[in-house]
Length: 418
Image (cartoon, rainbow, N blue to C red; front, side, top):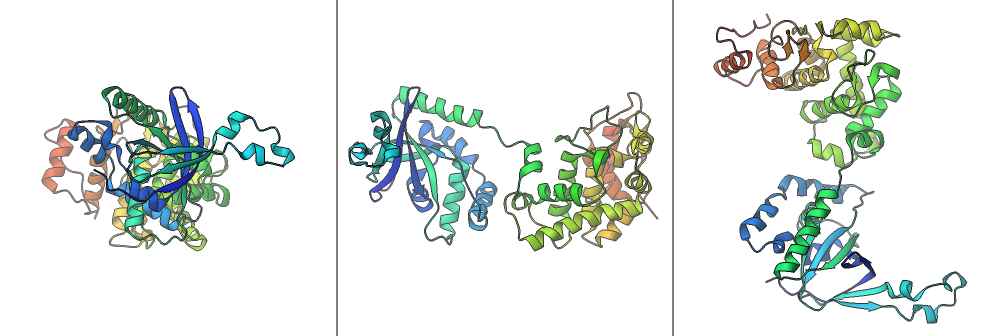
């Protein structure tokens, strides 16, 4: 049983939707952490409850805890909490209208007045989250870690009644799945265009606005990594550019490396943001210097002829494919462990980039269909790293993998750079 906690009185609104009566309340982080548990009460089966619990990964809760601790403009939407047992009481402020002398409130209806009041929790209720379990896990971690808040943040919480009968549990499970199935994450395109905390999104916008690398039609404003077939002017998509920066910022040994989750959720100070932008601009400056096809593209006023030269059914340069930019950025980020970013880009740009040649032909580039495949990008990356003596696979493992994916038992690894 859950240990009894002290009585609290929460400001609340009472509402009805369908067959659910709910109470929208304010509750601070500490009370949430102490009183509310995970959705283990949805199932009688401990195994099914444990399965729900396993979804609450430690990494996600740590990210949310960090967000609560470091982001001044933090905000959560409402958590939905089921309650059963105990004696939660609703107290309507039914006398508000009779005491009111404000002209603006003279038109208050009885229904409106009856919806405003307080909800009393006596401490012996069983409370568990139906929606917002990862947020709850982050809150619990932040409180456990001793988050420095005085007073604690208040969150919006919606309470619904749960009946621990077979019918009541079925009803609650349906609400649990409805809430979690219909909740849609913010789209990647919206994040890139609007997010003011995500370092990669901010940097993408600054690259577009403050440099000439991706001005105008040089970048396809498509949130996915798939370049539209009809596009003959852009180097890559805005979604791909976001991913390239994610790799550079989270894997490159540049002095700014942080986990991707932190980069997405916690806006650094403006001076540090400037450093990420300068790193990104520097990266494309080095590519401009050392990759001749990118130099042609970045310098062109009319980019169509350059794109047609390096991307099409004839193959072209791997750097003019979103997957190719991603692979080369991963290679360069790996190389920064042992050398500067400038040296890493210079070395990587000595690698072959013609899709119709080794190591792309047959595993990334299909000569018969004249199409590109994303299925074997790890093998392509490791083959290229092998060529600069930086692969983490053994030669035998890599050769076996290459032969299987090429369907050629006589294939040999590509020659290493001198």
